[in-house]
Image 1 (cartoon, rainbow over the protein chains, first blue to last red):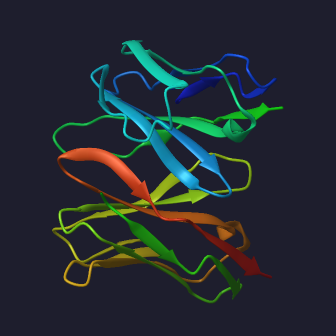
Image 2: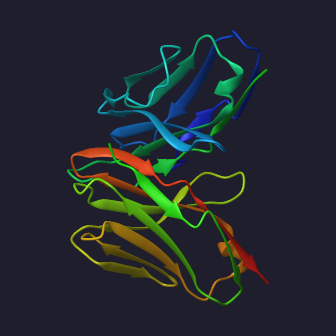
Length: 115
Length: 112
C-alpha cells in the first residue's frame, strides 16, 4: 500500500487566496483526520470523519476552514481566504476503526506558507 | 475536554543510557494512550501504544507504563541509539471517540 497520500507537498500562496489541500487515505480505512502542526500550538486535530461523516470538527479554527469527504478515498481541507497565521504543516491521517480506536497512519504533510 | 501535559520538553541523553518521558492526562474516561515519534521534517509514526486494561507494554527497547489512578503514563527507551533522536509525542483518547489529544512533544537528543 502506498500509505496516506497528500497533495500538494508544499504550497505558497498570498494572503486572501483560497487554498485546497487533498488527501487520499489508506484503502480500507474508515476514519480520516486532519491535523495542523505549528511550533507554537503543536499538533492539533482540526476535524475527523468516520465512514465519510464528520464526527468532530471542534478543532476547526473558524469559518474560513472547511473540510469534505465525498467518498471513502478522498478528502479536502479548504481555507478561504487564507491568512499568514494559517502557515503550518497540515497532516492527514487515516485509521481503521473496528469498535476500538486504532493506529493512525499519517501522510507526509503539506507545508503551507501564506505571505 | 481532554488535556495532556508532557515533560520534559527537551531531553539529552548519552548514547547507551535510558530516556524517560512522562505524560499526564485529565479525562478519567481516556483509555487509549499511543506514543508517536517524529523525525525532523517527517511525519509522526506510532511506536507503541497501551490500553487501560494493562499497566505495562514492552517492545524491544521501548516500554510504556500506565497508572490510571494517578492518570499518568510514561515512555521508557533503554540502550538509546543515535537514531532515537527525534520528537516524541504522547496522546490520549477514549473508546467512544477516536479524537487524539496530543502532548506538546519532547525533543530527545542522543549524544554519541
